[in-house]
Length: 237
View 1 (cartoon, rainbow, N blue to C red):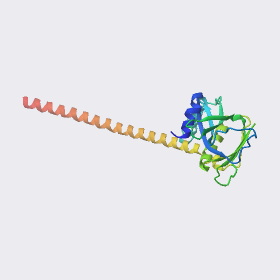
View 2 (view 1 turned 180 degrees about the vertical axis):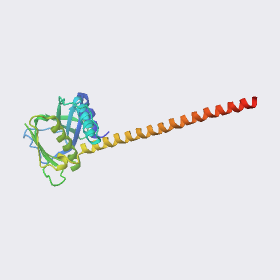
View 3 (view 1 turned 120 degrees about the vertical axis):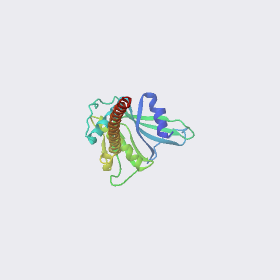
C-alpha cells in the first residue's frame, strides 16, 4: 500500500472523509524553534493533504459526469449545486521508525488565502501556502506531484468556494486550466463511454444478424418439412 493510500485509510476514512489529493513536501526554510523547546521526535516525512467529506466526493463525481457529457454531446440531470459541508487542508507527518501517520495542523479550505506557484515559466517543485493564521514555504518531492496537487486544489476552490476564493499567483497555465488532469479524466471517461456504446451497437448488430439467420433457418426447416411431407404422401399413394 502506498503512503498516500495509507494516509487516506488511517487519517481520513475514520472521520468519513476522503482524501482528494496529497503532496509530499519538505520546508524550504527551517522553522524557528523556541529556545526552551526540547525532546524532538527526530526525522519525519510531511504530507499536505486536501480532503472532503462523502457529500463533497459525491458531488465531485456528479460534476465529472456532467463535465464528461459536454464532450460526448450527452446530458445529465444528475448534477446538483449542493455545496460540500467540509473541505480542509491537513498537514500529516510520519516519524522515522514508525509505520503510522499523525495528523498535525489543519485548516478549513475557506481559510486559504493565497497559493503561490513561485515560477509560472517553468516546472518548479517550490510553492507557498498562505492561510489566515499561517504561512509555509514548501518544496514538493517532484514538480509533477506539485502540479497535480495544484490542479486538484484549484478546481476544488473554484467549484466549491463562493466567497473570498484564494488567490493563485505565479502558477503555470496548465494548473489554472488547459490540459489539466481533470480534462484528461473527462477524456478518459468519454472514451470509455464511447467504447462501451460502440460495443453495445456492435453487439446489437450481431444479435440482429443472428436473429435474421435464425429466422432464415426456421423458414428453411419449415420448407424442408413441407417438402418431405409431400414426398412421403406421394410415395404412400
